[in-house]
Amino acid sequence: MRRVRIVTMALVCVLTATLCVGQQLSKKISNQDVLDMVSLGLSDDVVIDKIHGGGETDFDTSIAG
Image (cartoon, rainbow, N blue to C red; front, top):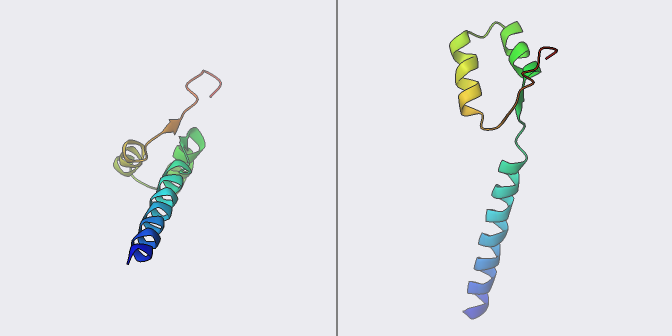
């Protein structure tokens, strides 16, 4: 009975760690991503929703960017 609890807890820990790593590996939205979405013909509202819902961004706001 004790062994089953230990194995269950170990599986829960592994699953939790996997989910956390998966979230950290999500790609930041960049200038090129926005250009790609616009070139696909997505509406401004869809692009804005993607930016707001995407989490982190990596925009180059310099004049050259």
